[in-house]
Image 1 (cartoon, helix red, strand yellow):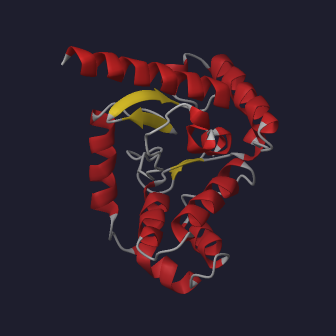
Image 2: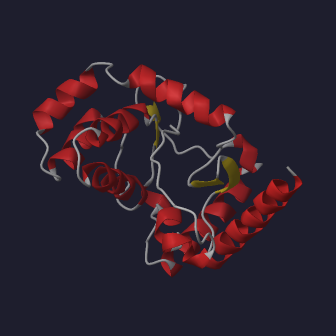
Image 3: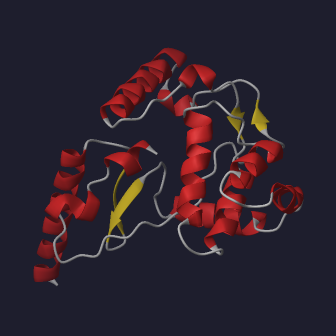
Length: 204
């Protein structure tokens, strides 16, 4: 959410001559936990400690405010299994128009700003209904397992390819960085990546 808000549109001139394309790929949270996820919001072990995790929360909140977004970590009472949210977003991708992007933004807003439990079929159906979809049909879809295997397979493939966080930025198939950062830092990362690719092309 924050990375998309801060993303320099058109690369901010950093990748002239290169097409920049958004790819919405699944990277589910808590995919190994059955049901809706954990009741309490758990910070990943890789962060080192609860204290370090909360420091990072504060940094994200500050970056969000700078980008015009408000992250309400105190409202995030559950760390949800987001497989079903990804199934729903994938479903919307086949409906055309801007629906997939709009739905993804609504799901992000529901969790990060409103503290809604996006592991709940009821909540997901309510979010979808706000965008004109039939809540009953969405609940019925989520009650099944259509799309779940595909989401897990795509997630595994992207993780094997080096994607470990969102958003992830890649240049001609090479992962540059993951996570949100200021637009000027993104532009510099693209410039460095382009320079490396050009040097490799000369040496080939």
